[in-house]
Length: 336
Image 1 (tube, helix red, strand yellow):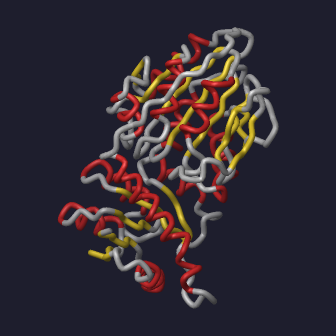
Image 2 (cartoon, rainbow, N blue to C red):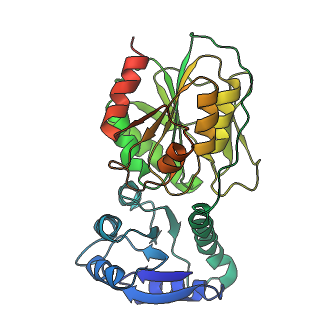
Image 3 (cartoon, helix red, strand yellow):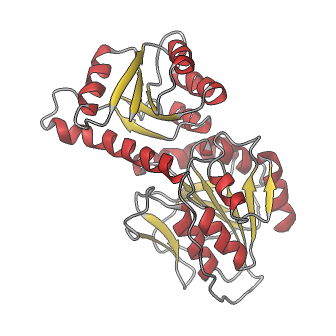
């Protein structure tokens, strides 16, 4: 993979170079010392992937990500040395199109290969996502279910660009929203709690991590919070599971949507937001086949029009809407 590094710290650049050297297929094609230089170099020679720092002179990583995704879009992974201190910036960058976040590998670590492993795993995931564009979506089979109007659920999936999209959507819903909400965002477990807190403080709703064995409740927003998948079980509770092990992203939107289609006995809406790849398209299709309303974000309002595009291509979405029209639609459906 052709990779670019954007970082003003020579030690961090060297750490990234050493980590990438463990995988001979990776080639560093250029290094930028600030975001402005990265925007220019990306326009001259677009890489397959950019490893983007957050705090830099001239132009920071959030603005550089925004500019690159608008002008010469490509895969971007944020690499940071202090995720706790930079948590808000992490979600800002993901909100404008960054795919994922990982810690900077430590120079002089006891086992250099182990220190490099998280970064190399992220790059492998990005490569799989990029290859998905050439693969056909497998058909999914519908399962019979019993319908009931007693409970409402909004199942939402998002990836690159998701934090900002989720924030905007949730801001459009009142505190007394009459349906349960479960979010599946492609984010590592180490960032999930911070994301739930960030969303809750910005939108005013009760947002927290989903707990194993709990039942979705109206007015509560539950975010998938581990590196395992989250499923709805037949008894209506949520559970984390390692299976299926071959899913690219953990948690998988498809896994959750498909479980909702099979086991949710009330009214439900599936919403697929911005993101790279195809995760969620098959699950949304199954929800539609089961008679649920399904909504995909439109191209114009998506930071990365991958997952919603995949859903539209297989006719998985009953409605395709701009981001600012999704919350009003949910209010129509689940009016008090």
